[in-house]
Length: 511
Image (cartoon, rainbow, N blue to C red; front, side, top):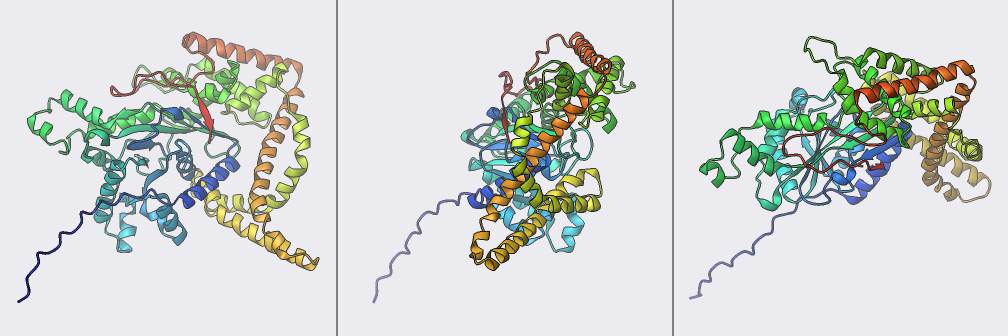
């Protein structure tokens, strides 16, 4: 009779660590994102990146005014791998699904997409429930998660209120010591969001602790009783307060106005003052003026119109009209700085660099001119709203550029073969072509600046003197309204009660 043996105890299983995606795909996407942004915008910057923690659970919340460029800029606010919470509807194609997987994207179904996803057989509740679990797992593992709390592209000149789903995920997240989440806002600011060749930047807000916020909220509401203290995972009934805190954090790093015309008027004043103050970095200086400009424009009487002082606005409009007459962008601080420099004779056109790099730029435009023209024409045709324009130059624009590169490589290979040279020598062109595009676009910016300044210097002396005096008058009016505003600084307004109390930094970096 055989002796029965007790069953072997199974070895304890270690919970699987959530994946941050594929490093190879992340590297590729970052390279493509960098190129897309710099081919579309003249300058892409990040201000205050040192505020973002280098490790630990991190939730980055951003505004979403300009579609795909906002998403791409988010990748450069931190060197850490960023896992976005993104809509499942954007991953309908095979390449998009692979990119989602490679970036560790956490898919959700938005209410606006519910009907379309239901026709595909998608269970909205199951997908969103799984997304909540994935977010909790990612944060518990110390990952950086990014989300646009507005719930989609918000094509208005102000930050919308956060959606309930993001707030609910944060309230239900289990806080226990080392797993506390740091929340940091990043505001993407565009000087002219739908115009190529303008400048854009991301401004990082003050970080705050989700755990500290919840404890403070419990104390303020008088709800920190024995039951809640014993059960830290219990959902808090503070959804409205947390939504207001997130909204305030986003407003602190973004530009907000009631209408597009009011936003343009504000940006004209900011750009002109930033240049008139003579700061070394007019774009950085412009960021520091946003808070006071919006405070000036906000009416004391709720029934009054949102507007800046009339005299200040009149001078800024006159200067911005001059910038546009010279071929620049009236809301651009850099173009205003070039105008002021040309008026005073202190700015140089850099003609030597312009003509030295002209042959390389010519080769770049010979390669990219035709496909760029097709991409922009197609984007203008497909765009249903201005906010769609630049996003469409990225997708399907990138596909068209890739097809164009392959066609040119094939033609080079045929030419080499006909000349008795191995056709494989055409392959390095695939690596060289994007760099040629970089040189071409950079040269175009230098050419436009040189042409801009030449036009200004051709204006009558009396006109130039009048405009130079206008900058002085505008800065004097601004100083009277804000005597404590130092030039060349980034001044962010005070955020919520749990915000970090350290002074903001004026550091910036290229994206």
